[in-house]
Length: 101
Image (tube, rainbow, N blue to C red; front, side):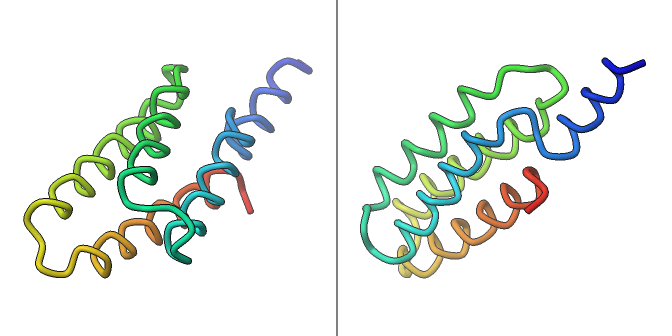
């Protein structure tokens, strides 16, 4: 019975809260100009790679998709910074929701 409770609590705040918090910080760093787009993309992909549980597949797939969108923006958009900041804001919101913040 207690194991089920721990699993529900872990799922409510995400299984990887520290990794998600680090990504939220990377989002802030990118939006505030402390890191560049390439480094931010690396953060997104690195976090996606760290999320390994089957139960968290949707989060991993979302991050992989967001990183792909950043790559496309990087090479096809006339407004790279604006569009990439929009994606960063979406990632940040998703990660905050994931950790229940």
